[in-house]
Image 1: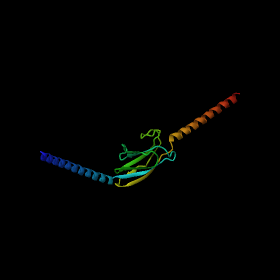
Image 2: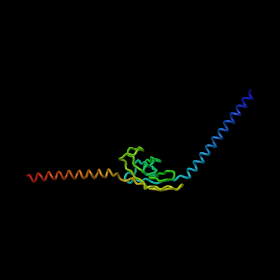
Image 3: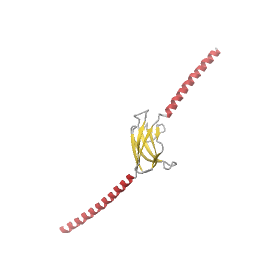
Length: 170
């Protein structure tokens, strides 16, 4: 009886060992595929600059614009602050947007300031592309400031008109 038990244990151990060997072979095949895919990738790296608010919460977004009518989100990095970024991608045509997330989240809001790269031609496998993105001053804030200035001048002009009317009547 003891000999049968040992015989079954050996068979079970051999069976488990064969399964482990097969699985490890599959894992090495997957690693080989991943290494080949990595050698075909391109690196897009660069720097986001925000001269107006250097401590802004910045998010960088990589878009595949190979089909301009239907751009696809490829990757997103919550950078925290302006600085360096790096994306790995398959060869293609890309554009990177970087925006100040005023709410501190990864969702773009219409009030967030945004900068963008020129179109990026990253079609050569293994290539490295360096870019710089500047986040501009808030256009809405500039327009709002100018509107306030116009409103203030208008109030002054109306006040002058009233004072001239009282002078003419009086």
